[in-house]
Image (tube, rainbow, N blue to C red):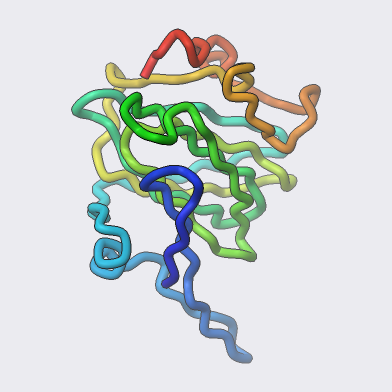
Amino acid sequence: MKIKSTPLKDCYIIEPTIFEDERGYFFEKFNEQKFEELTGMNGHFVQDNISKSSYGVLRGLHLQKGEHSQAKLVSCLDGKVWDVAVDLRENSPTFGQWFGIELTDENKLQLYIPRGFGHGFSVLSDTAVFAYKCDNFYNKESEGSVKYNDPDLNIDWKVKKEDVVLSEKDQNAPGFKEKNF
């Protein structure tokens, strides 16, 4: 497992070491001890979530606030997504900045998103199965969100505007300056 820094403070790309032969492949998807040793971050996860979406579906930007804040370890198990993390920690040197990465079933990359970040992804393949490991339990009352197309963030979602498919919640999310985080 290799850990690569992103331009955002405390946000990391995890690249597995893959062993392949005529039978297929094997890799260690996550190792808490190695992760903590290499990053100094807590890597203890308590909840796993899976979603399946079609091309153009955009989920985000979502977060959990306060004591229910969550760090996430995300990956694409099948298909291809454009994954985006936004630093919403007001005291962070990278506050208001975003980072995007293509996560696919082929590259097997994962993105570690620390607490205090917004997160979202858009589906670039016909369908995609997306996995989230969370270090805290979901709490509906602690949901926060930021409008996916907020002009202050200016995120490129890699999907044509007319192809974007949103939930009602995401369509009505507040803007970045409204600080719903």
